[in-house]
Amino acid sequence: MEKIIIDTGDSLSGIVVGGRWQAVVKMLPESGVVIITDDNVYDKYGIDFPAFPVIKIRPGEGSKTLSTVGRIIDELLKIGADRSCFILGIGGGVVCDLAGFVASIYLRGVRFGFVSTSLLSQVDASVGGKNGVDAGLYKNVIGTFRQPEFVICDTTMLSTLPANEYLSGLAEMLKIALIGDAALVEIAEKNYGAIMERDRHLMMDTVARTIKYKASVVAEDERESGARRVLNFGHTYGHPIEMVNQFQHGFAVAAGMELAIHLSFEKGLLDNNNKRRALKLLDQYGVVPDYEISGKKMEELISRDKKRSGNSVHFVLIRDIGEPIIEKISIDELVGFYSTFQKNRKT
Ligand SMILES: NC(=O)c1ccc[n+]([C@@H]2O[C@H](COP(=O)([O-])OP(=O)(O)OC[C@H]3O[C@@H](n4cnc5c(N)ncnc54)[C@H](O)[C@@H]3O)[C@@H](O)[C@H]2O)c1
Image 1 (spheres, helix red, strand yellow):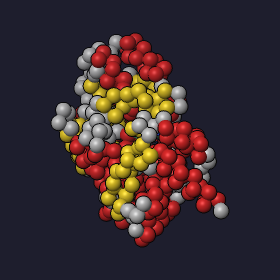
Image 2 (image 1 turned 90 degrees about the horizontal axis):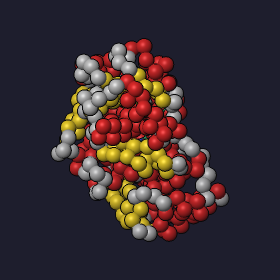
Image 3 (image 1 turned 45 degrees about the vertical axis):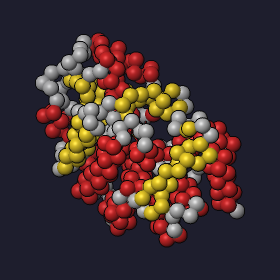
Image 4 (image 1 turned 30 degrees about the horizontal axis):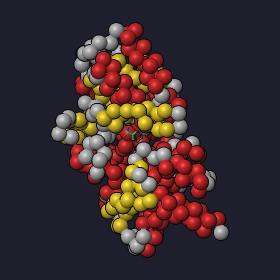
């Protein structure tokens, strides 16, 4: 078991990797806890939940809306949750984002923590204090920055995840490896079998490594004004691909990473060997999906990217395995590169 502390200066948050999730009871107050979860997680684990009121949401991104927030708040009021209540999110990224957001705004903010049950939420969604919901097609445009008191990542829970959800989480893990942890790239290259079998111990190690990297970046830049931007590797192209194709987040990011790797090579930053190595890793795990999105649509959606600055985007490239670099690149150049890449791919 490993405990990783996230210290942003304003707040401390502890992430426990490898312990059994049932130990969460020891971290909760004796009363006033309300659990937020989704139907799938409740079906698998509800029987062992601590004895507190449970608010269930429908699984999936479709629940990450202000109307679900309204419903959860109505239920909290019905339960009589007051300022001393504690919200415990038990679930994947959708549950954690919703639970963290509700806890940030309910009665102007109450205590909260997570049991993070999907690989994506263990390595990404529950680290960093970003909470929020979508508005129509636009993901995560309403939200807050607030750190949970704790996050528990029990890698045995990964054994019940559907295969595509597991792979989508792996894609995020590979993202962190490619931008920040060359040793993790090597672990992933050498342990394909054990990783695909979801070996609890190996996953404890890889999840902890991934969290440590993200935590170090978040500690430096909680509000995403500088250093944290590296975490957007694969996102500039990935978000439009996700919006049009409705993939799980990790697959869209993997498609975006593939493009970013090629662009890094094209710009003379990444040498041929490392380009091939990075692409081979994505290929080995089969995380890049087939996708369709026209150059025009790509342009429209990149132009609406909330991280855009004028006609440019702070784009994350890599100059070596584990070495990211951010360049301001014009939307015209990005769309031009994308269109040429797609044309060459088809011929
Ligand atoms: N806040 C952040 O920093 C951040 C970062 C990355 C992603 N996210 C958000 O996270 C969300 C995606 O997270 P996700 O992939 O976990 O999606 P999710 O929460 O929808 O979970 C995926 C599916 O797996 C099921 N599930 C979860 N854990 C399970 C388990 N142990 N066993 C069986 N089934 C299980 C869920 O019910 C759901 O059907 C997106 O909304 C994304 O925007 C947030």
